[in-house]
Image 1 (cartoon, one colour):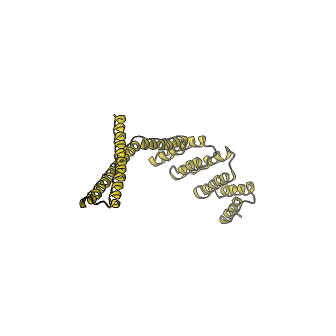
Image 2: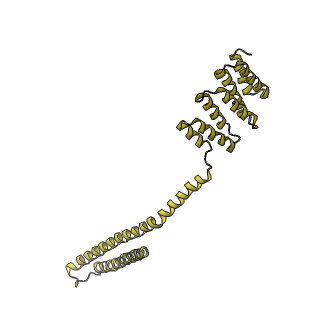
Image 3: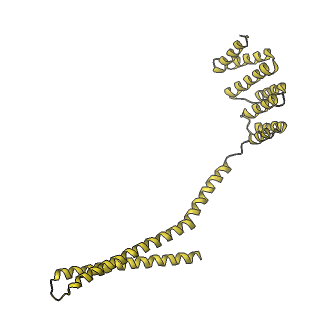
Length: 230
């Protein structure tokens, strides 16, 4: 049925083109006759002959205009149908594949399940999910930080949070920034949540010793002065 429609439209376009071309040819013939009549100067011509010929030329030009409009309409219809049936679906198909294929290439965020559990208030489930995320991305400090946050804020178990972060620090060769961040977090829990100033100060001194001449050691010294330990 689709190809039958195409055939009909192609025939209509061809017919419109034929009528347009024929009208143009006829106009040229009738204009030549009109020019000849005007230049002949023969007395045998009736007074209305030239007027009739001019009207005939105008009529042929009208036919040409109508044929041109019909040709444009039929051509636009054919192009539009081809675009809608073939081109547009092809573009949509390629776009859809580009979106979904690229989405498939992006690995699922390991943190997603943990965040979902947090949103549900399932703290133990969230901790388990974040531990799986830490296994999936060993160099990502965020799962450990999230676990410690849940243990402090929701479970009110600051010592467990300290142990979580210590396990993270000791179980991986961290980049400088990540290691310093985790150590600062341990010191913060000792200081604010447990009230163990001595251990907090010890962690800060470890930062100074481990990362000398860095902004981390400078921040650690600032903390010690703030705590009155410097």
